[in-house]
Amino acid sequence: MVTFGGPATRAVTGILVANVAVFVLQVFAGMVAPGMLESTFGLRPALVTHKLMVWQLATYMFLHGGIFHVLFNMLMLYMFGSDLERLWGTRRFARYYFVTGIGAGVCSWAVGINSPAVTIGASGAIYGILLAYGLAFPDRTVYVFLLFPVRVRWMVLIMGAAAFLSSIGGSGDGIAHVAHLGGMLVGYAYLRGKSWRGLYGDLHSRRRHERLKRQFEAYYGEMRRKIDEDAKKGPTIH
Image (cartoon, rainbow, N blue to C red; front, side, top):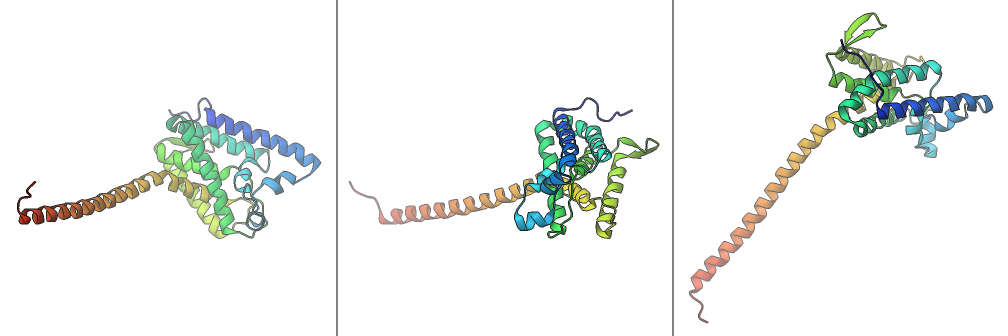
């Protein structure tokens, strides 16, 4: 039997603490100035486009829309993120988390660059983690609603398909499906990027080898020509 999560790892703990602390700050700030933090640090594409508030592409990840929103995201982070961090190491996991979270924000901005709507939540990064978990541990079993056993690979495919259909259908349910799908797509591109970089590196190495080979052949040919010319001149008397 596989248990999910286990002891919380270093990066997961840090992200959990940061999100909970910001949510508590949201609650108190909302009592004084409702919506102030969300309008300044949530992702509003129009402000990123026209006022260059690019920090929103990262800060939106730490804001949440309610207690259940933050609890669900942090539970998913704990359940699936800890195993990934143990597998990858803290630095790689933290880098992946922020790449997918910011990438999801960029996707949300790109599909509505003039939209005044505010997007908040860590769900883009969480979906990126789910994608990575499905690739790393595809045959593990999760219990949906604590009742129905499903292989992780199928769970990830179902969630990805649902995010895709919702993003193109405009469900209007107040959920940032584009960010969910974006987190998965950016995560997949990032994880597969190593093999793509390897292919580019191989191609670059072959081109460099061919260039050095042509240079050597040209140099060698010039040297042979000079040697042949000197041989025709006869011996040199000192």
